[in-house]
Image 1 (cartoon, rainbow, N blue to C red):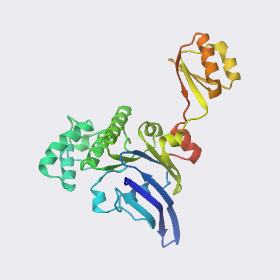
Image 2: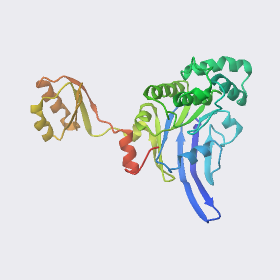
Image 3: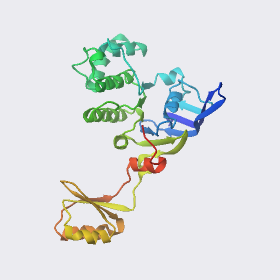
Image 4: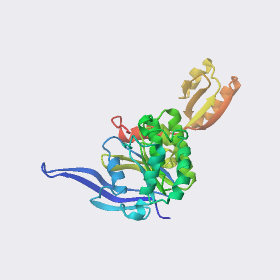
Length: 310
């Protein structure tokens, strides 16, 4: 199966000829993204994410290496026809309505008028702008403009959707809508390649993670491979009697509480002993499962505290 995106030993150097300086934006970067995957592209500021996206979109060219997008060189018309793109910083004509803007982009994509009239209402509904399609974009909130941007990225029914900070400016409900839209695209068999600084949200929807830093690939793989499971167990109970705390501490367990439950994290070799102890003390054991690292924890382990995933 042909990967949706292929980077092979890609290198890009920016040259300041007047100063005689060379800045390596990417150095021997290699990764693949399979069809129908949601892939998160992560890294701190200056890591090379924007350069990589610009190369795969065909906006700039790599100095060395091989790139394929949907099986074609970046910039090839056949590749462009299969890509929908939402940049991080974009602007629409404020005097246009959503309906007119999407019609304009449909014409740029070469869609037939009859197809456009049927498609636009569906896209507006998909991004939850129904009822606002006749309002001028200048009166939209930032979140509404962001959702409209996603609609224009989907106008040509692309195989590959590239989203740079798709939840920027959205409230929690809006971010959930975007996550749901991304998962719906995956269910339709589309590939989503996204950059985001909200790692907890990325973890909920992505299949694959690529992390870059200072122009080099740091780690790439499926989310399952990247996070794996630790040798710790997580036991969730309704309550943990205070008299058990010294015993649990002696077993190396950590306890965290909120209003609804108590979570106990301990070495897997002690999980049965602890569960039976809690049960005998009258606690209701809600769940018990291997503890898993979080994407945020992994990111800062690889990048360090100075890394900002923006």
